[in-house]
Length: 63
Image (cartoon, rainbow, N blue to C red; front, side):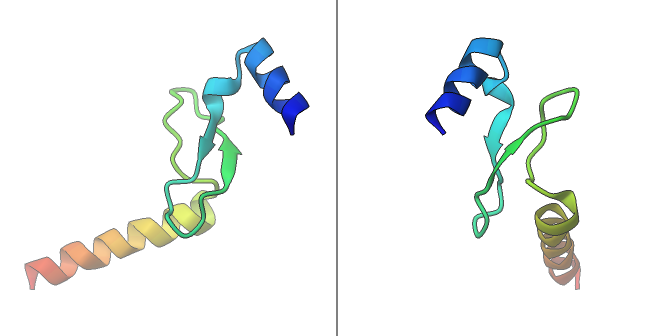
């Protein structure tokens, strides 16, 4: 793990290593997005789960 961290610092990819924004996950992931704005380790799991929860919350607020 230390070697991987040192390599990421040396080659400039450290800024692309992020923690998933899902509070129950918090896995580390490499942000492949062009704008470096990735938030989820997996859009299919964490991203989808969080987006659905926000949608349901907004839907409940309207009704």
